[in-house]
Length: 392
Image (tube, rainbow, N blue to C red; front, side):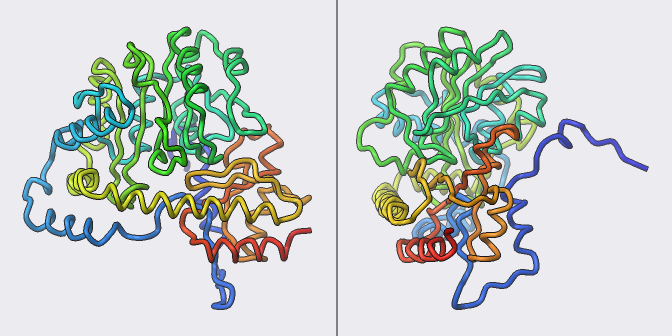
């Protein structure tokens, strides 16, 4: 006898991260060829020692950290993020326009729940972030793919042609996951203008903003006089402070939408992780130099990836930045088969491009994502040695 299951969920693909872990069942990796895991874009190390000590102090001494807190987050953290983002973007962002969430994925689902419902359409640039697509599928929202060019940047005119009366939002990620590319400020301004013209929302995921290679302001959207009617900004503390297990993210939007966001958050989590929020606040106030060092290391790894692909015959580097390299492989084997084959034959775990593309887009079978943030420059050299050995 079958039990009732929401068909929208059965139609939603499983997370490729979960699927890729199943490939390793029963496998062992000898000491002379250890696993190189470049499948997931998340820090695999604990937060810095100073932050861990602060987390321990909070757990022992701060009774409020073990109780329910405000639905929209710790007021001090909301104010600190508003202040720092105002300075960084040369704009005015108020504390009441910031919500703290249980990771950036919840920031996305909270935002999108206020924007779109079953039968609506949301435009996602491809290659897309699979969790964004999964939310659309399980919510009955049609994810409309916006193909990017050879530079992995979305085209404004192509996007304009995709907008219909059912379109509710355009979702962009910069620096991009999975492509790694950094969207030019002028391009984001044009997409903002397009969204505003059609009275839809522009949802901008800046999870990896701390690892942008540019020294200038990444965009000017918060300086638009009416940005609150069009823009929602998403962020994660997981990458900057290695707080992945504490689940702390943020969104910035106008107070009218924030009222609806609060309903969602109160229903799903009641409040964000209290210890994690205090850790994020301490990080914002004390770890700017440490984060700068982390950024420098990521940029060094990015340079190593770029140099490595210059020497690797047959491979094409499509995009590289933040935590990711997105590549075109030279094998006849489709990437959905190639990825598990690379695990068996080269001890390299990565994700196929099919995880980031619509099923009917043949480019996915030619592409792979390499999340290089968790391997140092020496391991990157080892990665290219292994890829060179199996390259046709």
